[in-house]
Amino acid sequence: MIEITVVQSLIPIAGLSINVISQFLCMRYLSQGKLLRSLKFGFLVGAGGGFVLNFSMMSHLPFDLDVLSQYGISLITYIALGYGYFHFINLGETARRVRLTRELLQSKNGLTHEELLQRYNAQEIIEKRLGRLLRKRQIQLENNRYYIRSKTMLSITRLLVMLKQFVLGKSIEFEDSPKK
Image (cartoon, rainbow, N blue to C red; front, side, top):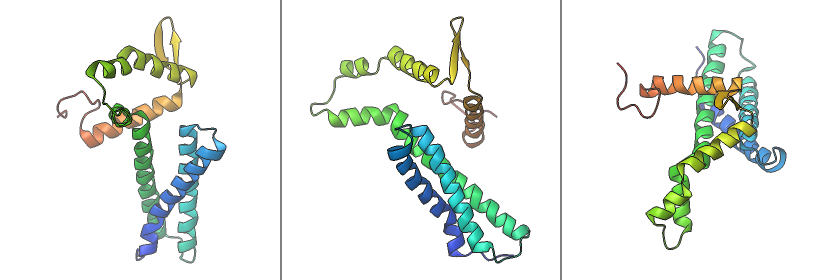
């Protein structure tokens, strides 16, 4: 069996570093400020970089099940790191707690409960989110009802529900306890 060297075990981290740098550069110079596009670009470039690094480290070895396993472990590790990075970035963009904390930090005199309620009107938040989903053609409005339009969005949603069910034992955050 192939001995896993320190360098080989660092390849997914190197891939993540390539991902972050590529995403940053894409966000600044290529994607016209479109976050999701830059995250996809960075993820793919990081995966390619990790593959090239893996190949260069193991190209002298005969291609067998051990080498294939090493590629697989590296890829799975990179995907997990990339998934974590995606959610780290997404957290800062979408989480109400982060946004609320940021606004409190920017307010020298703090904010009253009423001021916070004015800024976080539930109807306004839903309208903005629905508007963004409609503009991006991820959902559609027909006969006063909303439907998922994007197969990609549907797949992402299904995957996240499955992951949440697997990791947390529940499919929505409002469930009190895991299903048995």
